Image (cartoon, rainbow, N blue to C red; front, top):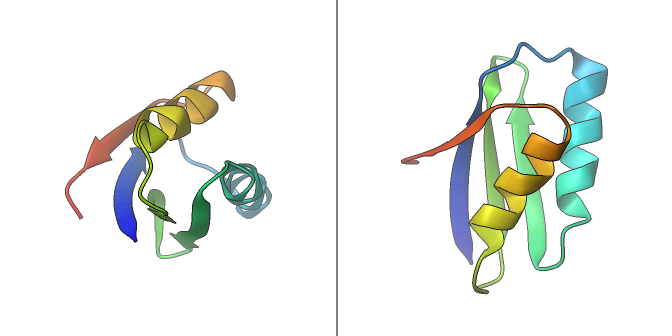
Length: 73
């Protein structure tokens, strides 16, 4: 498994975080998405080894009007 950590600049409420989580889980090769209430800007995504998944995730989030950045886990 590979993991990418993403920081989302916006303040998201619980319902929006849940929606984002579900959308990321629907990306092919993504197997787990973790978003915690105590760190609402951070998202950890585990995925099967496959090229371009991090960029696909960023594009999905940007298409929702969010401003994501990848950071070191």
